[in-house]
Amino acid sequence: MRLTIRTRGQVPAQAIQVARQRLYFALGRFAGRVGSLTVRLSDVNGPRGGRDQRCAIAVRLTGLKRLIVVEELDVDVAAAIARAADRVARAVGRGVQLSGHGGRAPLRALE
Image (cartoon, rainbow, N blue to C red):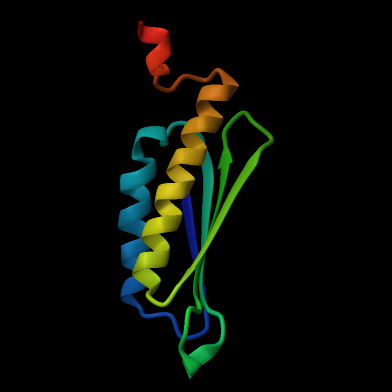
């Protein structure tokens, strides 16, 4: 899994480490199926405040031509990262399961 993190604007330095940890935790089980992972952190409107911390995550799965993209905005960059990481993990899980490349079986299949 190749991870690229890009920042724009006034993004705290610790946000990069938070993003790295959250994404490895959220996507670790899919490491063999994730080809590339790009994270863009930005402060949309600078020091004016408000709900302007953006986290955009793009995941390309190996063997598929699909690109999964998730974007979240929040006042706190860590909260935006956490929500985006959770959403992208669910989307990757669905993508892996629907593509027939493995993943957990749905509960109905176990009955």
